[in-house]
Length: 285
Image (cartoon, rainbow, N blue to C red; front, side, top):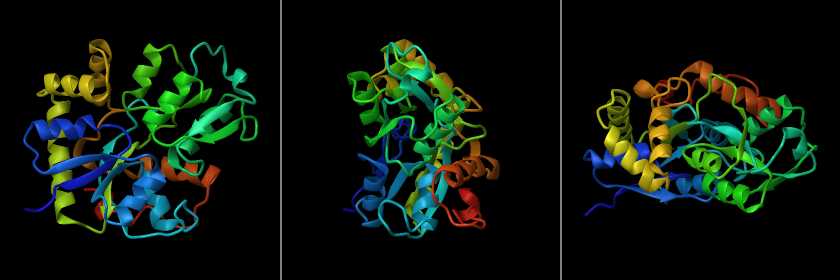
């Protein structure tokens, strides 16, 4: 008997779990601690695919100075969402962004897509790199825990963690530049089983956007993301939001990818030239 297809994810994927409820067989979701851990597992064959930021695909395909120090034939198989509420959040009780000066700000790793979005958000609020202290905290659930326990004063949150933070009194300070692409499904090469998964996720996206599976989605959001009913309903609305929600058709559009690449070039490392044209089979479709 063949093993199930394994997908590494930072936060539980309500989209994937809804697809499983609709009959998607033999797929196992594996939590990952950070983006380097996710791509180390992908490159070693410990997972078959990753739900991740498109910036990570750029980094591990084109940037040898990435945290693992190597590149590979990593490809976008399908675009998934436009950030699901990705925003900069401050600790409960924060009065203004100015209070973050000298404080600890949490990132997955400093040279990564959500970190670049955080730098842009803080700069728009008047804080430049060096005005605050960075802490490498890993995945979104870990950063949420740190924000609420005092381990950091601000961080980027999304995918239900933002809603839990708001319910706990955290302060939303700024969103991300638009248009933006938050999550893609990627793999090494063009594995047929991952393409089949991408097709199923696109079909499930169509069902969610059409309102055919609202009850399943809110049940999975409540269970997987530990959201109370009101927050689970908000999460459902966010999935359907054209600016922040699921990507109909799974196409990674050039404009949104350009925003992600532009943030990397502004705050991180990227070679010159066209880095977007070969990220996937027509960038995910």
